[in-house]
Image (cartoon, rainbow, N blue to C red; front, side):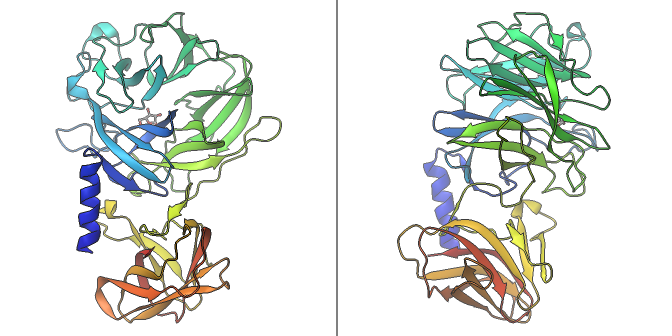
Length: 448
Ligand code: FUB
């Protein structure tokens, strides 16, 4: 175990101090993240989320959103995420009210080799008016360092900035403030080139916010969270121009079953697949202002309409068989005999464990990449007060057994090994099955 952590520590140093994160959903587990703005820059996906923290007396408004700064993350495969660290913090922004903790949903875009990071915050000076203003910071690389503009954008008052650059080079800024607004941006990307317009064809009842515009095959999709019922769901419209008119098309993602009041998203195409980034309160089930970013695949119908995205725990991408496979982020589970719980309720960032306690109970975890080189053993970090045996199968719950792991009776987490007897190369769906029904708790499994 020591070796594994030492290796991770060395990896962090080798990667410029950036933290390596391995993930399914939620994809970021070293801090709370929300309002994900994902962008493809070069051959990586960069993620610009809000950074939720827990407000305390004297630090933000207790029981409400509390955001002090922004981090940027990136990934080459959507499975392994790197935290590049903090890029903008409230008290360094000249126009932002000190200790206001209102660094809400941001966005970032590249133009002519420069990266423009847009963020809403509370201005210190009443001459900017009431509520939120939108600021910009500029960098030569997506991970920064970013140089802050000294003033917010004039005439753009509100939250949730989103930027879009059309094929003809014209840039647009969208934001929310009761309505959804849009305006052209000047070539310098920090000033409006037209008066803001209200994008009118959207639903009139219920809060709308978090606009995100993208183009596909000449269709402009204006997407946004909307409260049609009690909490937000993701909806979209389609139009022929970046500022509309738009036609309402319906729902991209239904309201979260966890009851998280907000959702906020972005849509990207990466390596021929479309993805929806969104958030939920996975790491904070009791308090929905501490959220976590997720990603799932998004598909279109032939007529360009969007198929509804069903949120998953498994997320996207493959998981390398030699890494810690967090089976609690399962693709499917048996109807009975399986549950998932936090490993440590006092520190939920430690993640989850899977509990199997019925003979034949199973967890399916899809897309594990075994590569070509024969792997000879499998380890499980597990705990069992009675002792119990789990099987690892491929193809189906009745498929070939590739390993059996005996978890001995123990009150502490132990790493137990089993021999791989029937190695299968390439991408495999795994089934972890209770052989004897004796209660076993599993943190992860990993092959070597
Ligand atoms: O994160 C704070 C606010 O919650 C965002 O600005 C909204 O879009 C909602 O997600």
